[in-house]
Length: 116
Length: 113
Image (tube, rainbow over all chains, first blue to last red; front, side):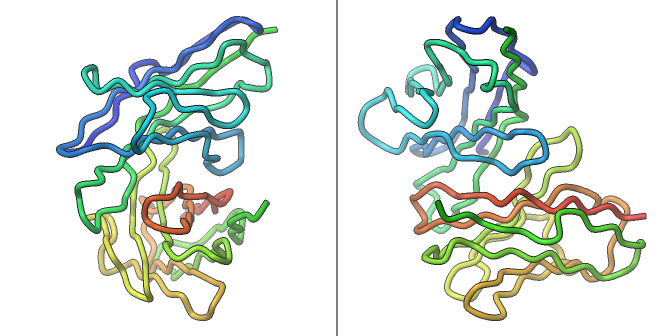
């Protein structure tokens, strides 16, 4: 069964420091992996995706994520955090071997707090 | 940048009543989705829709739920007889094709009294 785990409910980091938000996944085939961000009272905003190709993918607002097949991980990173990055971050996976199955399976989310 | 828009932003309904949640997907997108997020819980897939028919649905999407694309722009989710446990944030999403990212609206908060 497909699943996504975000092991940290909350991550706290000082402004200017690097940040990492962790995600591990489980699919039977090859994964499509996504990161979304949710600001208060807003929808889910796409940040970046991995489908094939380079393991390091770059996305919006200076975020990047590294696909690690052996560790089944797709951690979100940013070299220098901003206070405005404070939000809820969701990792999602889709199994691209699953034919017409296009649904995204979501992690529980990680609340990122960047302190000034 | 094109956006998915959802109306209303907040819907309050008596238990047992029908409710229709409305979405306008991005205009050149072909795939449409509904998800829900109960407070404090995971985002859950409800249904996907392509070529005027449901392509996949979850076990949550029972006979009380239906979706429709009544014209070229709207995509609606109907709950026929609402229950207290239907209270959640409902998100609509659309994508250009099945491999592109899904773009989400801001959601409709549904409160069942």
